[in-house]
Amino acid sequence: MMLRTLCRAGGALLQQTQRTAPRLWVTPAQQRWASNLPMNTVVLFVPQQEAWVVERMGRFHRILEPGLNFLIPLLDRIRYVQSLKEIVIDVPEQSAVSLDNVTLQIDGVLYLRILDPFKASYGVEDPEYAVTQLAQTTMRSELGKLTLDKVFRERESLNSNIVHAINQASDEWGIRCLRYEIKDIHVPPRVKESMQMQVEAERKKRATVLESEGTRESAINVAEGRKQAQILASEGEKAERINKAAGEAQAVLAKAEAKSKAIRMLSEALTEQNGNAAASLSVAEQYVSAFSKLAKESNTILLPSNSGDVSSMVTQAMTIYSTLAKTAPKVAAAAEEKSEEPENHSASSQ
Image (cartoon, helix red, strand yellow):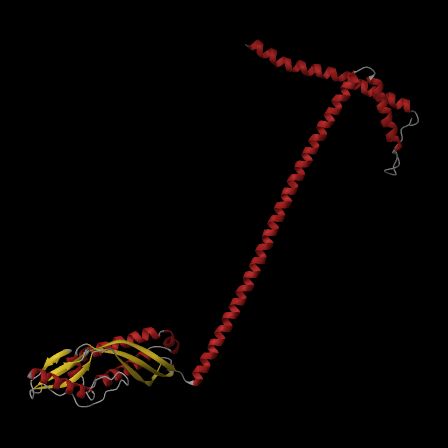
């Protein structure tokens, strides 16, 4: 019964003291504020994600875990209350000079978490102030290593470098920097105007380069088209000449075959009865036709002495034909004899 009464009294007193309990970090305003610490009521209820540092007779005794805890009055005293939640701190705006001597105004946001309440309580007097100052100095030193253009391009690497530098120093304070984000970067007006002019010039340069590349590609395409057209034209002309030559060759062959057939038929006709009379008639017709064309194709005329005597011309032509007809069998017989002599000689040698 007495224990229940003490628990109720301790709970009521705890609720009253929590309204004015000092918290190292205040989430809404993210500023430290001082007030009365929780009183030692023998029975204490520690909220979740909080660590209460207890001193016994002025010396560190232990850290109260969330839940029910018991303390000895007068000897034990709650000295610090630490929040174990992730804490967000606004880093005030500050001026920094880049590597190319440009003054910048930069502010950021810092995300922290207390890992060791003992170090956070006894390692540093004011953790928030210490971390904020460390973030500002680290930011200035990191910005001094970069030019203005790299500051905008490498914001992510800049944030990681700042987090790494803060964690190296805050390990002794029991604080872990989770991340750092740059919110705004303010550039002087003149520098901003020059940057805008630079951007416009870069865009014009890109447009000019793209236009020149388009012109070059167009010229290349036109040249390629002309080249292909010339190649196709030459191939077409070559094919045309080949076809024309083939056609002419076929025509010559056809004419030769037709002429050979005509000669063969004529020779057969001459061997028949009245073949000579027919030949005489054909020669006479050709003579008359050739004589009628004189003085039509040129101004020079060559006339035979007996141009009026058609019969004598026909007789002369037939005489020449008869002589050739008689000599043709003799030539053929001589050729046959010559072909037979090598055969006889080969037989005798065997």
